[in-house]
Amino acid sequence: MQPSSEWFVSQHQVKAGRPSQGRETVKRTFQSRYLAGRQLQCTGFPNFFDARGIQANCGMTSFHLTGDALWQRMERAVEKVQQRLERTAAALEKAGIAYAIIDGNAVRAWVAQADEAAVRTTRDVDILLRRADWPAAVGAMQEAGFVYRHAKSIDMFLDGPEAKARHVIFAGEKIRREDPLPAPDVTEAEEIQKHRTLKLEPLVRMKLTAFRRKDQMHLLDMIDVELIDATWCQRLPPELAARLQELLENPEG
Image (tube, rainbow, N blue to C red; front, side, top):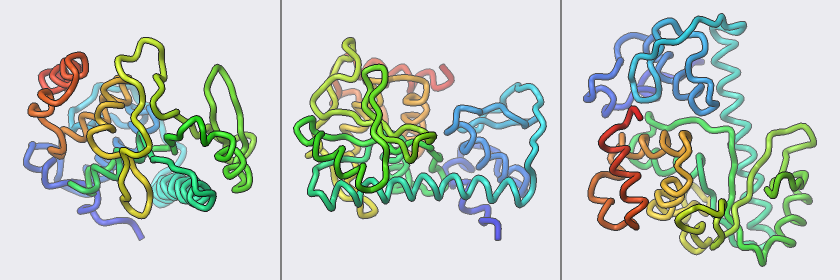
């Protein structure tokens, strides 16, 4: 059974004049968010609307999956990420290790508070840990079936030897030397959907600090559902405030 259109198109999108009529448009709306989360935004749609409802001029690529097979594959992808999230949280909680869910899953949890139809899919399960807890975390994650790997100065866990990486960020440390702020502490988290999830303000700081295109799209999602707005510039450090103002004034980049 395919999900209803209400799950895909938010009231905010309708108010903004975004495509909202007809089942095919509804599919494009969801598929654009699904593909954007995988950084494949323009694949296969001659009249493609991106994650903010803007028509994109993209080349044609044929799908090898259509209809129910495509919907089922997308649903399985979302379910697999959720299962990894559940296993990660359960392993750390069982070991008594303080953590926070960050990045795409944290954004997803916060956006869902405002508008579940605006939630973007993600393939990542990224976590915030204290470095002092790292040895215990490695043991707990390995016991849960994850494979530890260190590559290019990045610590990560894999859901099997050939799986995609689950990145670890260390609390109170800068991810890149040039970052304006270090990562927040694990205490800046609250329970959302039974998981320790980074609070909204430190999450916004992290996204503005990283400010990759993926981070900008996550911020635009939060702006879109009115979780953050221009008033936030007053509570941020000047460099981060400037980045937020840039997105507010020029969301298309």
